[in-house]
Image (cartoon, rainbow, N blue to C red; front, side):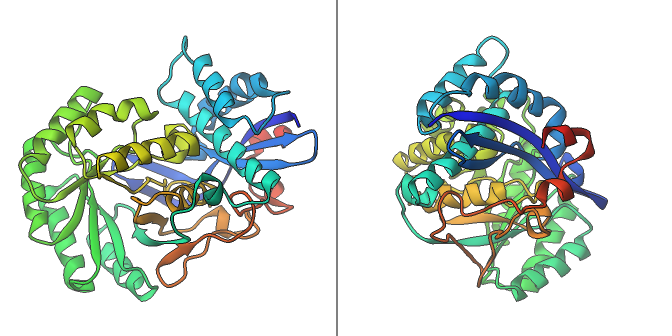
Length: 379
């Protein structure tokens, strides 16, 4: 069997108003879909990066660089293909859009392998469980709206939620306190500060959140380098009792080495669509396990295709140290007709089906309905 086609294209729908997560805001919900086809008629799909708005940089790397170099290769040789693609980026960068591109191809290869073997991906990786608790993940918005959404989420069956915080420290703490009052003591609340503060502000924030029984505080310190990221969050970790989480923006397992050695974070958050695909996210999760550190992979709520969610789900179900999954609060194309059977929340949990691969398929009219006009020729 040989690969005959590797194509990336953006899909999405415009939003009535932007969604914001810390410093990031998007005007559309959508992602970069990667499609791999073989000479025997099989097809795998993946997703690259956090948003369709990155296509102008990520897309050409897949369509003109990494994709062509694996045409004619056996799609079952995932590890060899992964290493060859990583090696190809040596002279022009291994951080950012390059690993986004590699990630999307890797996810599609795993979906394809599952379809070839007739097995769901999480079983190919080594199943640790069949379902996982989901947490509700709303965007950064006015506090009274967050409280309303939190109450609705509990009514929908969620038992955990992650709130966005910043840039006003006091206003953010007051918002978390209001949500805690609204949902009661039995709901797990996590807080993502999206690098909004310096380390001493982060220390003040962490101590305030400890009083509100917050389960973890995510990446509170603004960092411009990996050294600062590790040093400052380690400094904070040594001074507070609240769990710290991070790692969503780190790329390949090599960037996690210092975090693990110094036990900077209690929860690591690699993202399948950026760290290097399912292959590399699984390696990071297993490395974390060896240090008794939990892994709760990041899943970008700026996408909404359902493909990244499916990839994250299968990864999590193969890891004994992954107790929760991030669940997009606002849906998107994946639930509006892009996917034939998108992942569905039931009683606060996501459960994998026995369908082969990632358990998802694009609908017959997905390209026509959701592919952006600028790349119509690709699909």
